[in-house]
Length: 326
Image (cartoon, rainbow, N blue to C red; front, side):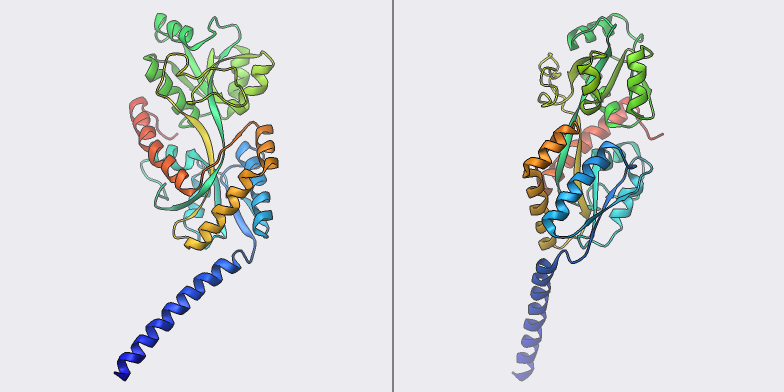
């Protein structure tokens, strides 16, 4: 009986220490600066948004959030670094859907798993993708575009900001839906693609709404349709593909914050609450809109659901259009 009592006491003490440790972690986290990895160079849209959200997140948590730019290999360098980090809440990743749904669709092997390697914390922002036309091309809407493509198969091309990017995927999804084919012309970034679209070197392009806004408003290019289910808050006069008679496409560029898989539940909940507070902040939303992005609400479960929904679509599109990593 005595032995049984002491065994029970030891088990109770161990459980008490475990629960106490968990509670202590929740109470003390964060007790040091948090590293926010951005897998893009400084100055780009993801970097700008990451820095804005990181600063606000640090204010909510009472600790500095240090930005760590780790660009390379289409976000793979930064993503793999975070995937291998200690899952304690002190290393986070702010990245786009490229990390979680595009890369797995175009790479046979990755140094991380898009689902198993990460603990989603929440969304931050999104920007729609948009079909644009050179201002002198006699196409003003999606129905005219499709009619022109069908009348002259193989004649037209479109540009994007790179092979295996969300822009190329959105283009291939839209053109498959419409039953047309265009030659893809990849550029190293949005800026050179936009320059050639304005100059008439390419007749069409797929780009982000954020990049298109100034050129559309200045009348330098024509906006044909957005590839999202709803109209963009930033270009509300531009119809969706569905409104133009081609339903079934919802492609955009979204950004989220994740941590390495295995995060303690209480730490994850604290990070989720803090990020939700940041995204509800009117100043945060105002700054995101000013940067050409729409604020995007949603917790970790919403991010996980988006990845689960989008990943098979991206893989099917990559296979159908023969999209592979460069």
